[in-house]
Length: 197
Image (tube, rainbow, N blue to C red; front, side, top):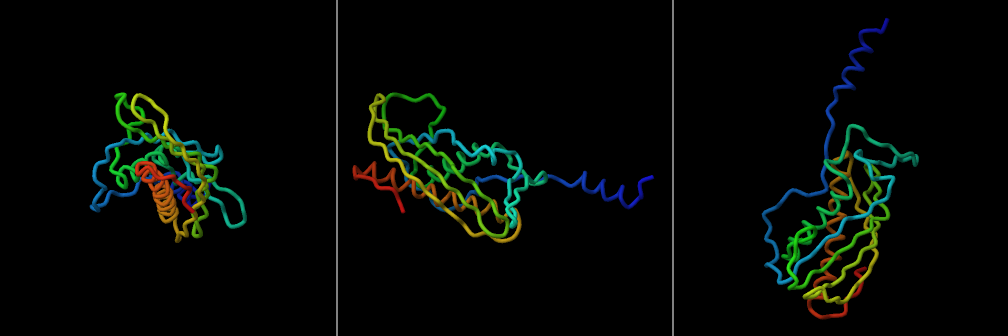
């Protein structure tokens, strides 16, 4: 016979609510950039297979890795990263993300490709993103323009708790988006872009 205390404990564990997280930060009232004359297309993001899970994948202090059943992403992680980068670029550049939409053959579109090589979460310590990325200019009627390929490593310190860890990844993606935006601005200005440090 199972003791009543054990039954209660098991029931409490089974009924614990799942927490869902997003990489899209809350919208703020800060002003966005004026509307741009060009558009962007943030392509689907590739991520490492080991973190391509509904659950948060967290590295422990002893190098063990835990999949947290009670802490999950609201949608596929690659989609979350793409949405966060698209949102930040749209606000910083004033450009509309037209990926997946029918497009006219006029105007300039900057295609942004992001390959996340490392998406590391260490609770109470840091959130880190290593990514290779490129910006490719497509002119009117599909004419090719310049392409810039870069790599970035961004590591954000975080406080205790999983919400702080997610916030750290939001901050890292914001910093990455700023670097991408700088390259787009250089291309728009006709300058020779360089990879941000």
